[in-house]
Image (cartoon, rainbow, N blue to C red; front, side):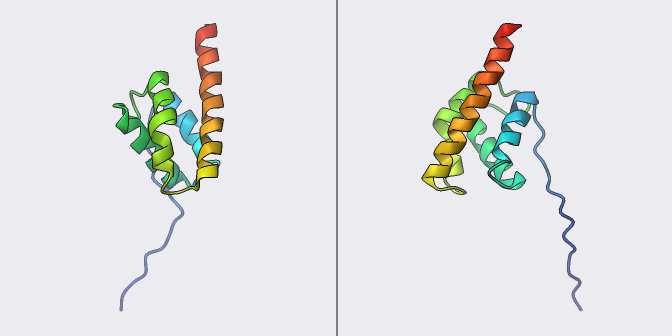
Length: 101
């Protein structure tokens, strides 16, 4: 007799720096944690960054250039555009905090 695995509800989370984590939190408002992490990881990887060393510049490029393609697997065009606008606002806020120092 074959035993069934119990689903624990635990989803492995991609660890990254504070910028990565902040953008991931924003994406998780729209997608499951697994899909959000996968999309963001793919997008920043395509601009030459990793979750640990991503910079504000990498994230701006990713949101503008590669994230819409990464989200295309999980969202329709309207949702992708909305997520992009919200992430752009978050990045603007983060840039404002950085330059006020």
